[in-house]
Amino acid sequence: MNTQSHKNKDLTMRVRRLLSKTPGLSVKELAKASHVNRQFMAGFLSAMEEKGDVYSRKVGPARIYFNNKVKVE
Image 1 (cartoon, rainbow, N blue to C red):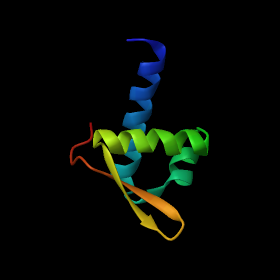
Image 2: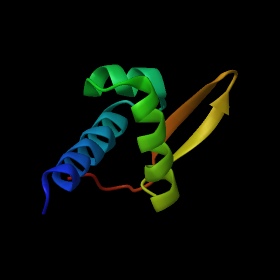
Image 3: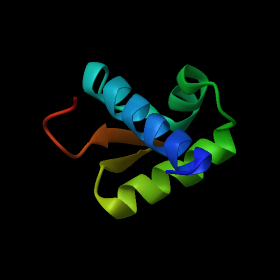
Image 4: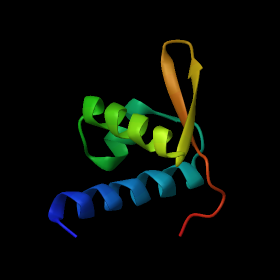
Protein backbone atom coordinates (compact mmCIF):
# COMPACT_ATOMS: atom_id res chain seq x y z
CA MET A 1 0.00 0.00 0.00
CA ASN A 2 1.48 3.35 -0.96
CA THR A 3 1.79 6.23 1.49
CA GLN A 4 -1.10 8.26 0.04
CA SER A 5 -3.62 5.42 0.17
CA HIS A 6 -2.46 4.61 3.72
CA LYS A 7 -3.08 8.25 4.74
CA ASN A 8 -6.51 8.18 3.09
CA LYS A 9 -7.44 4.97 4.92
CA ASP A 10 -6.30 6.52 8.22
CA LEU A 11 -8.33 9.66 7.54
CA THR A 12 -11.38 7.58 6.58
CA MET A 13 -11.20 5.71 9.87
CA ARG A 14 -10.65 8.94 11.82
CA VAL A 15 -13.71 10.55 10.22
CA ARG A 16 -15.84 7.46 10.87
CA ARG A 17 -14.72 7.36 14.52
CA LEU A 18 -15.48 11.06 14.97
CA LEU A 19 -18.94 10.61 13.44
CA SER A 20 -19.65 7.55 15.57
CA LYS A 21 -18.88 9.56 18.72
CA THR A 22 -20.56 12.77 17.54
CA PRO A 23 -23.03 12.30 14.68
CA GLY A 24 -23.91 15.33 12.61
CA LEU A 25 -20.61 17.17 12.23
CA SER A 26 -19.97 19.83 9.60
CA VAL A 27 -17.12 19.88 7.11
CA LYS A 28 -15.46 22.63 9.14
CA GLU A 29 -15.71 20.64 12.40
CA LEU A 30 -14.38 17.45 10.80
CA ALA A 31 -11.52 19.33 9.12
CA LYS A 32 -10.49 21.00 12.37
CA ALA A 33 -10.63 17.73 14.35
CA SER A 34 -8.63 15.92 11.64
CA HIS A 35 -6.07 18.72 11.17
CA VAL A 36 -6.69 19.09 7.44
CA ASN A 37 -7.76 21.94 5.17
CA ARG A 38 -11.54 22.52 5.00
CA GLN A 39 -11.59 22.37 1.20
CA PHE A 40 -9.67 19.09 1.21
CA MET A 41 -12.09 17.66 3.78
CA ALA A 42 -15.10 18.72 1.68
CA GLY A 43 -13.75 16.78 -1.30
CA PHE A 44 -12.73 13.83 0.87
CA LEU A 45 -16.21 13.65 2.42
CA SER A 46 -17.78 13.84 -1.02
CA ALA A 47 -15.71 10.82 -2.08
CA MET A 48 -16.64 9.00 1.15
CA GLU A 49 -20.30 9.74 0.45
CA GLU A 50 -20.01 8.35 -3.10
CA LYS A 51 -18.52 5.14 -1.65
CA GLY A 52 -21.39 4.91 0.85
CA ASP A 53 -19.26 5.39 4.00
CA VAL A 54 -21.12 8.53 5.11
CA TYR A 55 -24.23 10.47 4.20
CA SER A 56 -25.02 14.14 4.52
CA ARG A 57 -27.91 16.50 5.02
CA LYS A 58 -28.03 20.14 4.06
CA VAL A 59 -28.84 22.31 7.09
CA GLY A 60 -28.96 25.97 6.14
CA PRO A 61 -25.69 26.79 4.40
CA ALA A 62 -23.85 23.84 6.00
CA ARG A 63 -23.64 20.20 5.01
CA ILE A 64 -23.83 17.90 8.04
CA TYR A 65 -22.30 14.40 7.89
CA PHE A 66 -23.28 11.11 9.53
CA ASN A 67 -21.88 7.57 9.46
CA ASN A 68 -23.64 5.36 6.97
CA LYS A 69 -22.38 2.11 8.45
CA VAL A 70 -23.35 0.94 11.90
CA LYS A 71 -20.13 -0.72 13.07
CA VAL A 72 -16.91 1.29 13.31
CA GLU A 73 -13.72 -0.52 14.36
